[in-house]
Image (spheres, rainbow, N blue to C red):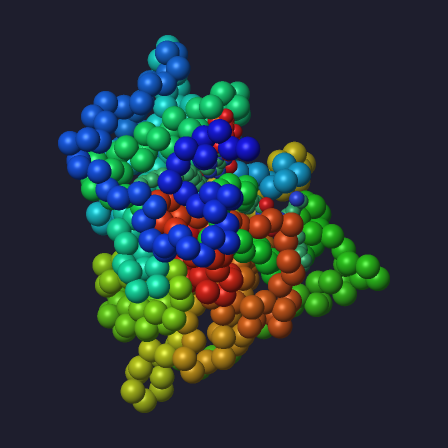
Length: 388
Ligand code: NHW
Ligand code: EN5
């Protein structure tokens, strides 16, 4: 049972398969004058703080809270270590609200002990473009777990989103909550198999030696597709057209305009990498691929401290076969010294995962919408959305 989630406008288990319920908002918006004006109450030892992520000092505090307390795998061997530059990129979008970057401090020490954030996003569900908050980086310090702080933080971010006249949200989680719109599988492509095996990220396969494994995952020194190059500012209009057209086929996808493409897809060192294929004569942009950088701390290894992981982001192929395009993405990721390339089975990713020697991981990612009902669960391949 879910004492908190039962009270929220999300798809409930009891309604699963009820085809009489309409698709769309679960609750109508309330007049802004009826939105609670004061913050929710925290336990008396704690206070709310709005985090200015443009401030070096505050960004550092959020970074350290997450570095030490954010998501781990099911065996607690690895923990996400989002960089400061990444957090700024993820949170300080062109149209962000500072009020949606919410911290909790201990009153006595002023230490940051919890965080939750939202950024505005336009998400299309079938034919409807909905203004949403993309919620991410919910984190409660390890020493304050299981005290029901998370529901208060979720209610507080919801209140602050409502104050901006926004009534829906999207989020992902590794845990099952009421109720996923789809469940995706993580896949992993070894780039540095020796290190991955040494740190326990992967295992030597049956009847495999280390040298056979290294040979299996070997990649060419340089990319193979003619016209494959890094994306530049001048490509924003063409990439926007290519991506908008591609994403239009999925049931749920972001509605990107040029300013979104500039923010989310222009290369940003150690944060996001984007490449495209430019045709030989017309200089037409026919294909695009991208990945973001998210290292993980390796917990309790004597020789290695971080695992450098690339995560597949948005990819579009109209001319280069998607497996060939993604093989070039693997080659640049290897050149940039990533240890592993991760991807979900969203969009058309199934078409390259096995062929390029990705293997299924032990983790899944569940996608959710807040206050928006979908008639029945989607297939991962019907999803055109990648959250950070
Ligand atoms: S998913 C990553 C979440 N963070 C982590 O896993 C980091 C490590 N864990 C922690 O910090 C990406 C804590 O365990 C957290 C829970 C803080 C997760 N989403 O305080 P209590 C995101 O950031 C429910 C939603 O005692 P705790 C997305 C749980 O089911 N709910 O637990 C975030 C239970 O409710 P129930 C989650 O362990 C989306 C209640 O929290 C959850 O000390 C947020 C227990 O609270 C999760 N990941 O703290 C929703 N994990 O009903 C946004 C647990 O079952 C919704 N819970 O009794 C939309 C808002 C905006 C709407 C705008 C219109
Ligand atoms: C929302 N934005 O479990 C964030 N990762 O498979 C919240 N496993 O890395 C999302 N357990 O399978 C939270 N190696 C959900 C993700 C939480 C992190 C997580 C999984 C995803 C993961 C690795 C390591 C497992 C370590 C022990 C894994 C196998 C790789 C192998 C490579 C060779 C081919 C077969 C697979």
